[in-house]
Length: 117
Image: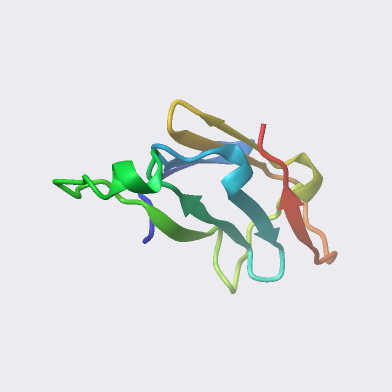
């Protein structure tokens, strides 16, 4: 599934809030692809409980399982100038907050994994 996100474009950074209730930081990955000017957030959310408990599930409304959300910052013609080394991510209260700082123009392209606090 693709989780919902809010994207804020401030003068100094893009801030992305992704709704991930029940996710654990070790089960979530955040990557920046400068060539595509794209933030990729992927992982899995597990239903809590052992196999016997899960068999007793009477109503299934929450989204669980593998997920992926890609967010393009800027456009292909005009990609966002990002400080890839300054990207931070924090998972708190079911919301992943990724801050992507802006910088001047650069021709350097890299794909970078972001650690989640």
